[in-house]
Image (tube, rainbow, N blue to C red; front, side):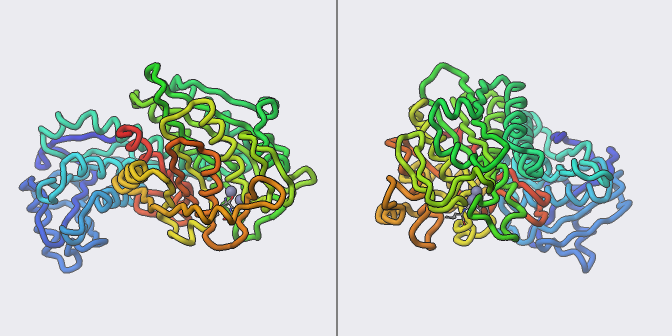
Length: 489
Ligand code: BES
Ligand code: ZN
Ligand code: ZN
């Protein structure tokens, strides 16, 4: 779908040419493009400021019907995300105009003071991620994704970066897969359906797939998962995906929270907090999509995804506040609040991952707490780890892919807040403050000596409003970050 191309604009016909423009510097090497930019900048309404945009038709010298100029703002402010957003916005707007092809002029890396790889990567990502619609549930499909997107580059860039576009496309397809799972309504992704969907796609990529139902979960003593699932007629699953390119023991385990709908259970959420709770399997979606992407990329990393899938519902069978349960690890937990269900299913999955795989690193992703959204807003994930190197690596991957993470503390003395009078732990903190931290500390009780990081994606997993390269709904947060990270760990 995304291709690198090097053509002479004077000769080649194109439906739409997109040219990113800086306000204070000429950033294109191609003389024809530089001339077009000069023409656009003669107009008062286009200065190349961030957000400026103008479409001109039938310009001299080029065979392109339509040229869209997009302002990047000041050169010093241009980074990978600015390029990603510009390419994404160009594609999303073209879709709304029912266009089908697009040629995007890639600025000269040297003029931007950037690496050529970074420039290409970000523009390909923006274009690929922007070229997605979730309209499965609309009877009338108003628009279609673009059929072809070409990035206009120099001839030698094509030779050197052909492989790069394959990789970027695969990873972005992974992000889009996660988005679609998250955006799917909860009546169509009950645990059985969601886990079947994961298993089916994973088998196609030759991942090793294990799916356990209630019987196996009982046999193996996953008491915390079963306690969360108790209230729903839609019975739980545990999905395990394994990517082992070689017979190495050096496995990395990823764990993803898979609550297909979080009503809160007996501690029922109020309206306003319920409507988007289909998003509560975003960690699971990111982990599953990452494993599928790693298989497609033929990654050398040995990675296992552990995905507990449940629905959290109130009913006569539901777990009650005050119940004490036996977790897989053997520790007892008093359920202080049935809406703190994520940490319950995660401790069983984490404890299993540690015991079975003895991984060199374990990372979990979860839409775990509203408190994390209060702390960091809707665009930045909370990052928790005792391990400085691992935290730094995750932070850097997130900065690169613009799936931003911010490290939060894990203060030992806050563990006090999770004490129970009757059980080993309470799943609810005794104070309402610092909820993202106490949730992470609760998980930390189950990691043993394993190098571990927890990423609370409650904010960035979902967007109510369309952004530069993502429509409303699931964002696929984490897939690009993990694919980048796993290459370097
Ligand atoms: N799934 C929610 C967290 C959440 C909130 C995700 C908002 C996305 C957006 C989680 O299971 C939950 O309900 N957490 C409670 C914990 C509390 C009961 C200790 C919360 O954050 O209020
Ligand atoms: Zn909850
Ligand atoms: Zn939840």
